[in-house]
Length: 156
Image 1: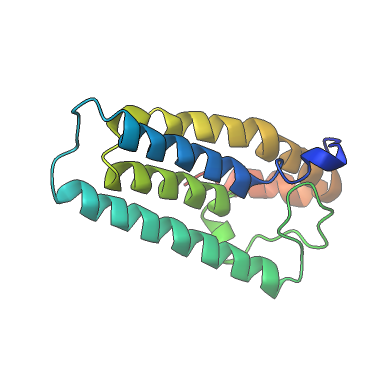
Image 2: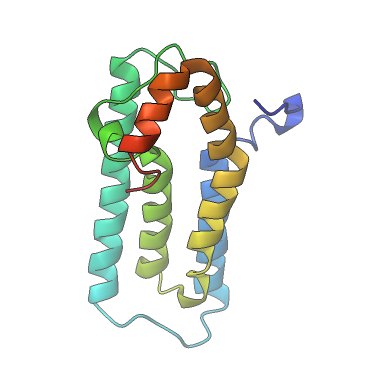
């Protein structure tokens, strides 16, 4: 686990990072649209589908954590290694949901210039959270986690 000072503990939560990226996309669409857009209708529909899909993934993941009575907080000690439900399909459904929500909002807001924020967000989340979480799981659950890595992809 990465040490964090007490003042940084609220910044070091994935929803805070997601909110910051969403704010950047919104600011770009509001103040710097540059006359670019995705077109009408299709972008709104696709954006809505991505947002809804992201929320659904996150809800399914939270339900699995709750069912197994383990923490959802990054960098906290887990009491159970969750491999059921949505975790049979993705090792990181909450982070995937975050990325889908960001992409969906970018589409809905016609924030064309903000599209690169999606892979940048994924990279930040991988470096700040996923790498440490995977190290913790690898050390605590060893063979069980190794088998899981072979069966389930990181994203989809």
